[in-house]
Image 1 (spheres, rainbow, N blue to C red):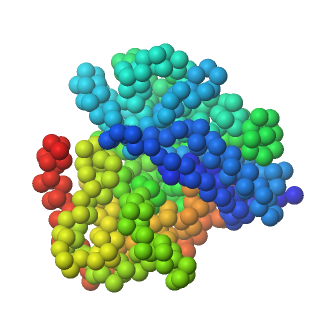
Image 2: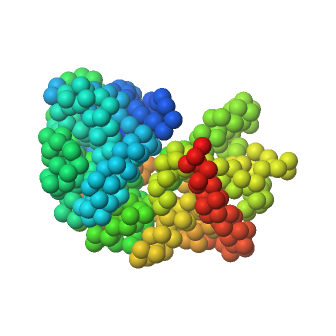
Image 3: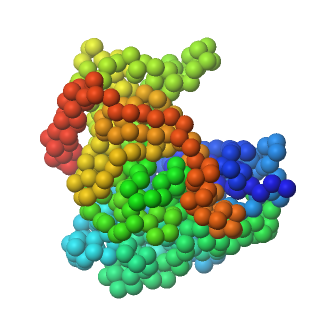
Length: 503
């Protein structure tokens, strides 16, 4: 009988469940959508029970695929989006929707708490600034706005920890997701109880921290009935989606760098020593004894999905006639536009912005519109704007001492040859593309495989299963146009930030 691994990815717009064999080949994959709610300006939240229903439906559908049986699944790995704050009571019931990584409602709380505790004190422990996207201020927001609910909280879980709980009944906090908390000691990888007291975070809310590849439980009878999985199947703690994707493209050695092309954009630089910078994000890798220095824009591939949803009606109507998806049609239109989009520049700050400007009030902008601009111009400018954000983050990382030579791309955006080439040209970096669509779920499966002993080491499984499918070298002929566009990109925020704050 084959030994298969199940990876579950809790994304922002959908979850994916995929089964792999030990050589990293996909046996079956299913995606299940669920909503993001935007009830007020600056709010972005999800119902964790929607995640669970989506996961259960995806697994049930997965097990209906030819050649996949529950008896063959040796272990389960779960990854998920960052900085959730899933409040559950003693019975494990979800008490309220969770603000997700795009949510900025706690901006005022961050300013107040930073002034009280001290920016240097917080950063000295957590290696990250206190910003509204993180978990810490969301929990303080619960206390201040929903005191009755707050009194019933037993634990605060991250999204992958919540799914692991639903599968196994085990309450866990994996190491890589610790960076959402500012009472997490980034040097030691443990809770700082004194900082928790200073921030007003009850120690009882914090689950025990576990290694990402640790087997933390087994599928319960109730979860088996819900999902179709075999009762007793091993489940590991899992980790942050960006970290699992980073592992899934083979990044585990110091200096190697992942380029992220999912809902969010950005990069993750692998390090074997603690090295924090307040302009960036620092967290533990899912691989032991490694950190990831990260940069992230809220725009990323999500900006393209937004544009297609709002302005891609014609392309969707022509999809069957042309035999070409709406996104592929837009990609072709963008390819007809020259580098620099004839002066059209896009700021991808679609839900405030994270690194390196850390501005929850930042807004998306198209600048340079005139009667000559076509839809293709807007699509290409969007691609270039996300690439400019990547370059900005890389420049900050390199000024902080990072040495980045090659980017390993993952996510849906990496499927676009044009967009990947634009990123290479704008950053001046060589970009290698492994299996971009399955990197995150395969990374979760690698954790599961190591956890149950199917793989002797991460090095062995990476060497055996991950290969570069294509390479994009930076070209120089469009450098002048992109330099001009990048200068405009940087100047736009610098000149508009006061207006954005006073809207």
